[in-house]
Each structure stands twice: as C-alpha cells, then as structure tokens.
Length: 87
Image (tube, rainbow, N blue to C red; front, top):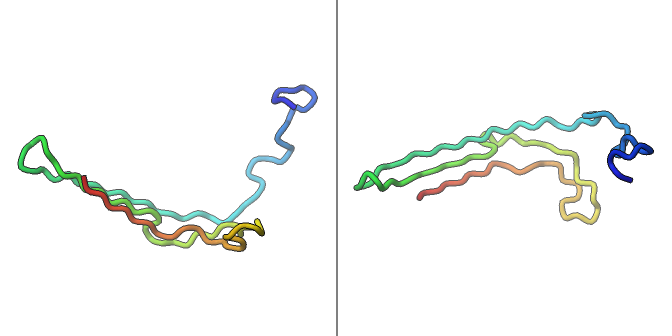
C-alpha cells in the first residue's frame, strides 16, 4: 500500500485527530546564564544553570502496559532535574 494510492485513500485509519485524551502536562523550565569578565577583555567565565520541571510538579502519564518492560505499571514521569556548567 502506497500513500496516494487511489484504492486506499486514508492509509492511517479513520480516527479523527486528538480523539484520545490523557493527563495534563505541567512543567516549568528555567535557564540562567551570567558572563563574568576576567583579567583581559577577551577572556570571560560563563556560568549556566538550567532547571527542568523547576517546581517538581508530578506529571502522570498512562501506565506502561508492556508486561515485559521493567517499568510495567508505572505512571509518573521524571522529576526535577538541575544542570550547572562553567566554562
């Protein structure tokens, strides 16, 4: 079956768009950076801080239904993640 085949005009099924619903996703990401000048104008120290899911809001997902998976039955997403970098 090819896309654009006149015998099968809709190869992806007849379900409409966004017919299923799941839990809402609440996530706040924040990135901060600051440049510190060093002893020469051409040199600087850059500091970066990145936070993902800053307020640590639990985001539930549909439970994993693959029985052979190690995450079978789990429904929570990842929690807060912070990253710091200096260069």
